[in-house]
Figure 1 (cartoon, helix red, strand yellow):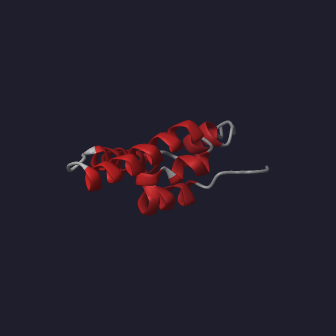
Figure 2 (figure 1 turned 90 degrees about the horizontal axis):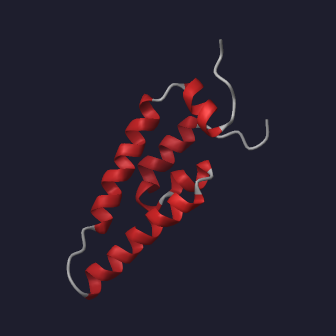
Figure 3 (figure 1 turned 180 degrees about the vertical axis):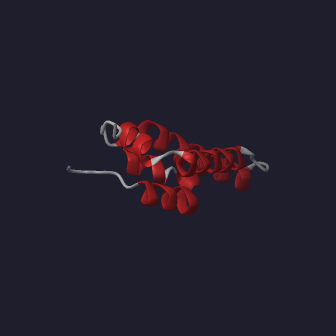
Length: 89
């Protein structure tokens, strides 16, 4: 199967670059990925220019939640959701 997404790699992206939406770019959810990236970078810019912004913290929490979901998800569930593969009977 072409472009098969790997659960372990999605978890690594969520750990290392989750606040930038890397795991969503990898999984093909570009809208959510751009949202994560925009809120994180926008929040960082605002925190430098105006006042401490909590947007990056919120995205960090969402990335941790995504990570937990990926870790708890079975391989069959992951494949069904992100690789369009039906679970094994």
